[in-house]
Structure formats: structure tokens, C-alpha cells
Image (cartoon, rainbow, N blue to C red; front, side, top):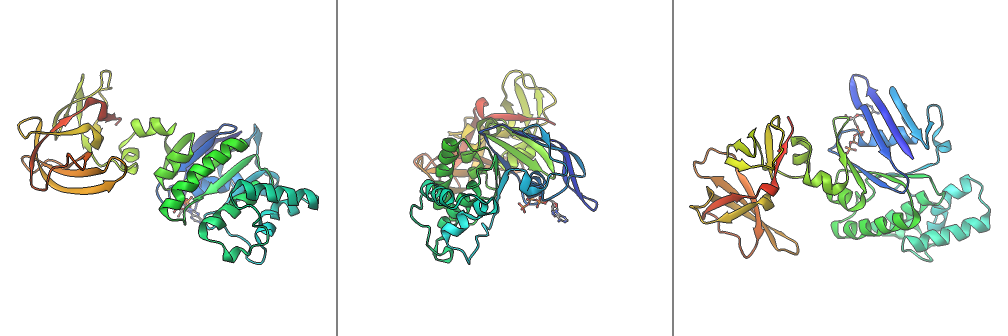
Length: 344
Ligand SMILES: Nc1ncnc2c1ncn2[C@@H]1O[C@H](COP(=O)(O)OP(=O)(O)OP(=O)(O)O)[C@@H](O)[C@H]1O
């Protein structure tokens, strides 16, 4: 459906996109994830035709889009701040794209009603947009973007402005909606939770390049680099020398999976892979801090200071019931399944 091939965009001497390659399959949702300034919005703008590429090609259904104006690309774009028209009511907003295409009035009314049902705002046609909550405005913006039935729907921080509980609910609803409609979606977000919940595939960007791309679970389980690991919130990353099934690290010799390439020069230890045992077992540590994370497992993150005090701190995850107190001495035992070698 969509292919980017070596797309480069420069602003003066700043490279916003650096030879980006990306594929979005029909009916799939792809989420582009990355820190501020990594080039996410520029990527959407290039696909929409709002920004020219300095090099490379954008193909939609196999056709090079060079020179094709935005309104002829058949893509829908929903921006971060949803930009509803305050002078129009909800129905007028949703019907906007249909009016532009001179859709028959009766047909447009039916389509608007159908879309408002879909986004959970049945019968809201005559309501003023200013009188809607943030979440309701977001739904109207979504209905408006879906109305002209774009072959590709692009969302820029679709849930950016909303509070956490509403976002978590909407993300589940959106995923269901896109699956039912068979919509092909390219979304941009800096929120990894949102990306992982919404996407069939995530693309992590760093400084205008694709740092990693793959199914959410794969990226989560096997971050390709220290950058991706840290961006996903993993802080247990240390230098390592790999020999066979052992990595030599500041936390001692850690088990790594068989077949780990010896050019791996650091390892990530997922906090869930650090088991807390008696001090004489494993790496001796002092509990420096603990913070309650909530959630169903009542999880606690425990910050450990290894014995001699000069090694890097180590994070462990455990349940509230098993959490040691600050100042306790414990032994850290590493589970090889949660030790992830990172490529140089
Ligand atoms: N019109 C412009 N003129 C000059 N530089 C620009 C322009 N648009 C973007 N940039 C620069 O290009 C880089 C990528 O910007 P972009 O907006 O694509 O990042 P982003 O990942 O979407 O960031 P954010 O999450 O903050 O929206 C940034 O360094 C930005 O400053």
C-alpha cells in the first residue's frame, strides 16, 4: 500500500529524514515511534504531499507520488490538535471531506450518521464542537478523517492531548474500529504504550533514521540497540564482553542465550529478569530505593546498588508482597531469558 524508498528531507544543513525505508501493508496499522525531533511528523508530511523529499521515492499502491498534490493522493491526515472547525457543528465537521468531493447530500448525511455511530457519538450531528469534551472532539476528528474513505489514514499523535485513562480506552476502541473497517493506518506517537497497543508493526526512529522496525512484541523482547532499549524505558544497560554463553559485565558474569554474537558489546537486563534472593546468593546488593508502580501485579521497581558501591545501579521488578525495604541487603540472580545482548 505504502512504500518509502530512501526518502531524505533536509532543512538547511539539518537532516530531518535520512534515507528512510518503510513499508505499510494494506489493512495494517503501523506506528512510528521516536523522541521529539526524530522526524516523525516530517515523515507523515512527505507521505501526505505537504513536504517534498530531497531524495528517494514515496509509492502509494506502487505509484510514485512525485508531483501528485495532497488532495489527489487519497490519504487522510488527522493532526495532533484535531483542528475542528468551530463555526460548524459536529455533522458539518464530519461532512467536510464529503462536501469537498461534492458527494450527494443524502448520501453524505447517511455516511455522517454511520461514522458518528462508529466512533461512539450517535446522533451528535447538531452539537457544537466547542461544547464537546477533548475525547469527544478527538472522535469527531477521527470520523472526519475517515469520511472520505482514504486508502491510507495518517494520524499524528492521535491521542496526544487526552488523559491517560481515556487514551487507554480509546486506543482499544481505535484498534477494533480499524480492524472492522480494514483501514490502513500510519500513526505517529512518542508514547510507546499507545504504539504497542495500536500497531501491527512499530517503527522506532532516531535522528531521521529507522532504528528498528518489527512487530511490537519482537521489538519489546529484542531491542536492536541501546538507543531502542533506553527509549522503551529500559535502564539496565551495561558494557559487556561476550564469550560463548557468558557476558562479562560490571554486574559480574551473566548468562546469555546460546548463539549470541560475540560482537555484542553491551547487554540489557530486563528488570523482570532480576530475582531477589538471600544476600549470599548471586550479586550482593543494597536496596537503595523502591517505587510502587501499581498495576494488576502490584508491581514495585527496586533500585539496587551492587556491593562494592561503584558498579552501575541495577533495577529489579517484583511484587509488592516480595519487595524488600530500603537499606536491606539482597542477592540479585539473573535469568538468562531476560538478558538481551545488544549489537555494537
Ligand atoms: N519547517 C522546518 N524548518 C526547519 N526545520 C524543521 C522544519 N520541520 C522540521 N524541522 C526539523 O526537522 C527535525 C524533525 O522534525 P519533526 O517535526 O519531523 O520531528 P518529530 O519527531 O515529529 O518531533 P515531535 O515529536 O517534537 O513533533 C527536527 O530537528 C526539526 O527541528
